[in-house]
Length: 102
Figure 1: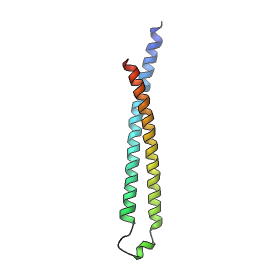
Figure 2 (figure 1 turned 45 degrees about the horizontal axis):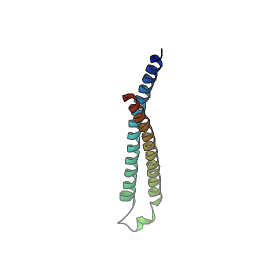
Figure 3 (figure 1 turned 90 degrees about the vertical axis):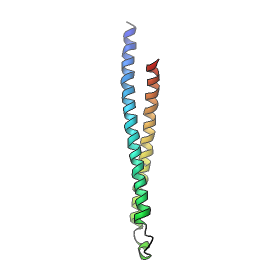
Figure 4 (figure 1 turned 135 degrees about the vertical axis):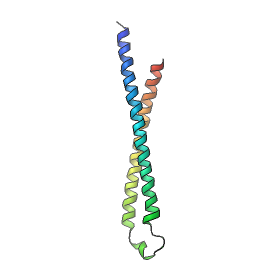
């Protein structure tokens, strides 16, 4: 009788480990994608929107630059949040994986 609850706990821990590992990988990818989006927005704001040649154009598109940088900063913040979530799921998966190996 005492072996059955331990077996159930092992199966439960295995499922939580699998889900935690999968969610850690997924949130790691989402964090990476959001950081790439931030880098893209920063590059476009610096290289495309910022006028370096035409002096008359320097008075104009600053609102577009600000919107581009704002959306890039939001993507950066989202990326860091997703990386934090990934770390949390990775810790859960590591703890459960270590317990399953014992």
